[in-house]
Length: 97
Image (cartoon, rainbow, N blue to C red):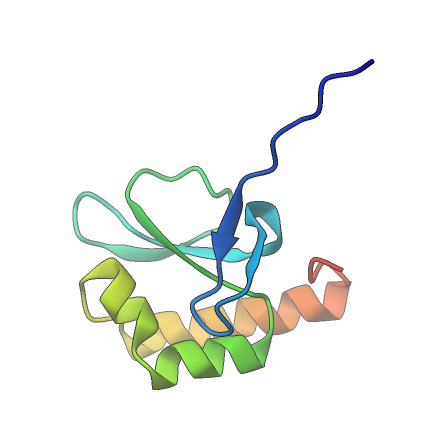
């Protein structure tokens, strides 16, 4: 019998649902204090996760969940880039479904 592989889960800051880490979009605060979108999920630093759905991102922004999770203010440019990446992911069918 084969080994059952552990699938790491993370909670979405918008809808608060737990999902496999790879299905979520990761935002990271690097040790240098920079806030970036982390498409690889391997960048060093404090991570926060959002479902690849615009509604989840809207909720996370409204409740300032990203800022609380990363303990820094998140710029509007990053939020716009995050929304764009979510729209792109949805359009290519890689939305985690």
